[in-house]
Length: 381
Image 1 (spheres, rainbow, N blue to C red):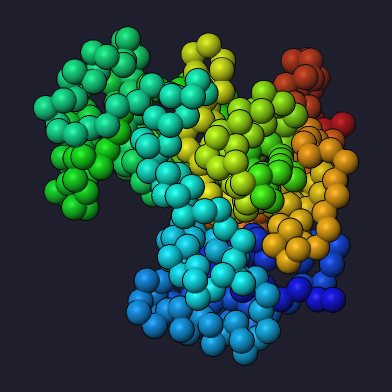
Image 2: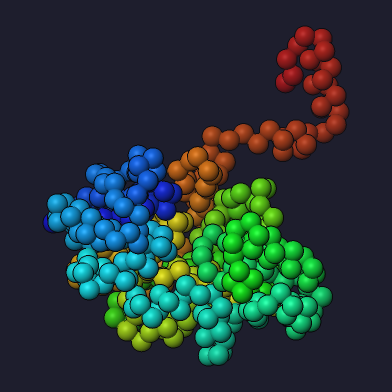
């Protein structure tokens, strides 16, 4: 039987990536998309699309219910945090269409400081972090946390490394926070300062049903999109990423999610970065939605996470021998205007001639001979 799902915020990169993953699954699927922006919606790859009010509008739930009933949709899959929260608030009216973590779990994960404080109190590795309650506190926070190293300054809510950059001095932090207050209306108390984590950058995505871990995968970010135009050299969106087998990363993520709720259900995407000791520390957990990088989890390995999520949500049996689906050396390349592409390490030089290495490996005498032949009209050998 064909599954029919509604993907919210259709037309953005996360929704189109998710649609690609769902179609790559083993079972047929019909994808309905909705968005409040008709121009973004035009970019949707869903099979059918609907223009709806903005999430949070008084008529949003009623409009979405009309779409669900008209299309015979069985499941709503949100793709951005704002949609997750609105759907969580509408549980009573949309319960049969949802497969979300509890409201309390979503609330905890939305506030990065609350999440980090909770995990630290239970002995899990997280960056040392302090809230900025008043700009006057910043110098004291530096004395407490920096140890001569930069701190990471960011807004405690939101996605995409919102308001984030490394700061070396209290004055840099104050200036950055003041700028966001004056230009974006973000209060100083919305910021946190954390120890700077200089090591490897990991992502971990997992699926859960009634407290049982169903599937978990891990990858590593190697370079980032948009860093040339941003003050920070890293972001949450990788330009180049690779799959990795890192049980220690999977283990800490599983422990953290179990800590949130003994009966947890849904999808969780965790970001981690290594500290100066090489220990992976959790920096945030995105609950209730797939990572925009989900193709790297769905298109390689034994199991497609997005397709497995749909089966779980619909109550279909899912029996996997190994919950940690770890494969290595698959790379994902992303750019602003392109569909993410995935290659195995062995494929990177297919149809590529390494001219530079060829030239530098030639003896100097051979290169002079080749240039001489070119000067006399003969092609080099």
